[in-house]
Length: 172
Image 1 (spheres, one colour):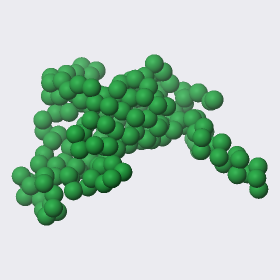
Image 2: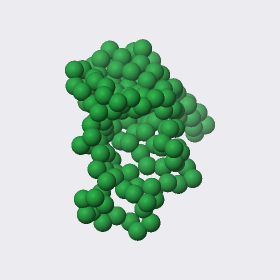
Image 3: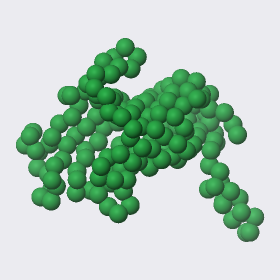
């Protein structure tokens, strides 16, 4: 029993890569991120966007995280006549194209979420769920998810968690 508990404790401390049912290796993502810049009129892979949120990320993925947005991807729900909670200062729907750059490669995907100021708690706030759709380097052919959770109402600090699987993610 003691050995089993020790093994479980080690898996919780060192959850870096493991194989899934498809035979692909998976990597747990656990990091912190801080917003460092906002740019207008940026592009990725030849596609133009109306804005970029540039974030530094450090943890099991190190580098930068860039959220690409277009004006039509941001809608205040009250302006559409959608009922929102009475206590909400403002609620909106947002879509973003998320790109995580690291020395090992780039991983990307789409995020869609509704942000409501009422959803803040002591442990964090709303989250940005990204469905991973591919990448380069070790992330070529990757799938999975990455979720960024707001840690402050200034929308500048995040906790990032997820699981990314792919044929090029190395065994440890």
